[in-house]
Image (cartoon, rainbow, N blue to C red; front, side, top):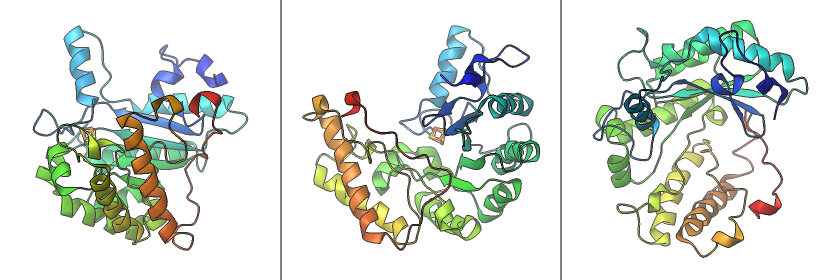
Length: 295
Ligand code: SF4
């Protein structure tokens, strides 16, 4: 456990609650908006539990911090900065639900951007700032950059048109898949292609009951999406398992098949466009060595 997890903020909250670290301490994960304005069955992404968590907490009468105060985030980061003497933490990610109207009177770019601005003013250059947000119009993307964000994750979720419409009905309705993709490409003109890293949700292309029923179809579709971005110099995020093998015990299962399917086509497609297209990216942790239990 990192030393900074032993400390609390003045209000008694733990650092882990406000600013947990992942990727072996490399990345501080700041989920600053814990609700999504794509709300309800007709808007929420079907694989996402953010609003469901909120509903469960409300139903149980438990407190739920929807918006993390900027001051709290800064206080937690000050503790990390002080006690992370080995300099293990290198980046922070600002993330949370989509903002389709306003939160605290702010649109999405300004809402998430205000955290980046405050962090960069207080700890200039200490961490690489990243944001996971919607694929926004160019002017909003520029605002992220101006606030000090260095890496932009406008996730494309799943490539197949039918599955995107089914799994991401809010994004389809408000923005539309083609416009979503166009904005991802456009954002590379603001951030530079290597600093735009769209994630996709590995595995959902074969999720029942709507997903592909054969591995070949899944590979074909996922590869098409990877080609689309990689051929334009944009490297989608490594899906889980790209660098690791599935556990031996899971080898015969459908889950392992999906895992290796996605990993395989990501690797093959990346190999086709590398090494000239993709120099090393900032803000990404190196994978930990495989342990006995992960082999
Ligand atoms: S937009 Fe993001 S936060 Fe909102 S439902 Fe979809 S995946 Fe979840």
